[in-house]
Image (tube, rainbow, N blue to C red; front, side):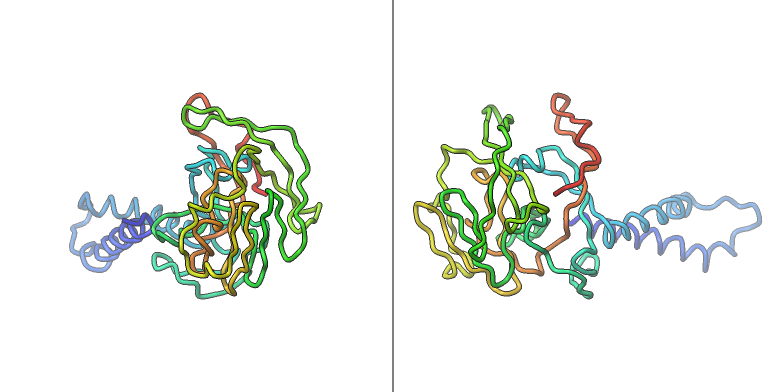
Length: 274
């Protein structure tokens, strides 16, 4: 069951219990009579549950990074906060947008519902918005004919299961803009794209694939997403575009890091996500 729904139900039950006691039962108890235990619990938990529900629904929601697809920007065990109102206000539980504020921009790190399984959340970087032409050839990214230059930034190593991975770490400039940069990881030995893994997704006719990479035109109202760990990410090149309705929010802060005792990194706490 969805956690937001569970939280909503608990908030509703405790709130109703408190209200029923306040309106109907409180006056029937004699002076000095002790409240029933269920009333005590309801009065104690309802304010806390209500605050958490409102904060989580409209301001910021926590997520944990489960995979390596966004390394080196986000590592396994990072706990992040996602801004829920940057792109608009949505009704809790049913997750329907009622007020539009901003649109996701190229370079944003976004949490969204996986198009092939909306009950599952994914996190990737926005590479293309509606109308954009995204090309990835020989591991070089171009959007609307504008290259996203890659500047070498040493190497990056991490443990993937029982396998030790070492990547080329680059700084990539969004739209070629030096003021908008992020880090990516490149595995020189990996293929540009594994065409056998490409699904028959809606809008597949907008894309062309070959051994050197791909070219996709993003449909209106949808987004093209890629992981920063370019050669170890299941993303839009394989399963297609993300509709605006699937967007959950913009990731903006690492508030904790904990995978296991050997990988706790205090220095990552409080890091802004670029």
